[in-house]
Length: 172
Image (tube, rainbow, N blue to C red; front, top):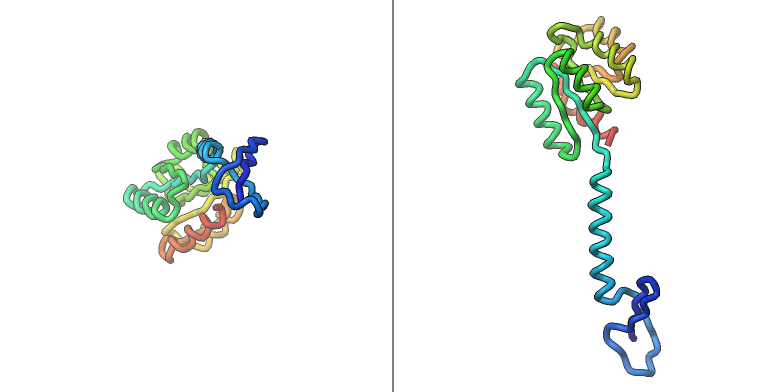
C-alpha cells in the first residue's frame, strides 16, 4: 500500500510502499502539507476566537461585597463571559451605553433611583437586553411592578445562585 498526497493536487507519493502486487493506495497529506494544514487551521482558529462574541453581563448592585461575590461566582462558573459592575444608576446607564450588555442583574434599591425605573429606561432604549431583578426586598408589589420592564425576578433570600446559573446557561 502506498499513500498519495491529496492537498490541492500535489500527488506526491509518500509513506511505506508495499510490494508491487499490492496496488492499494490511500489519500492523505504528505509531511510538508500536513504541517502547512495544521498551521493554517491554527491561524483560522485564532481568527475565529478573535471575532467570537462573548456574553456580556452587567451587575448593577450598590453593595460592593455582594457585587464582588456575585462577579466571582459567575466568573468561576462561566469563565468565557465578560462582566462589568455598576454601583448606582448613573454608572449603570453609562455602562449600558458603552459596554452594551445582553444580560443585566439589577438590585431594586439603588442610590438615587429605583432599579425598576432604571429598568424601564434601559428597556426603552435597548429592548433586547434581558434584565433580571435580583433583590433582598421580595415584596408582592415589587414582583408585580417588575413584570412590565424586566424578564426575571430573583430573591436574594432564596438560593439565587442556582437561578442565576440557570438563566446564564440558557444564554450560552
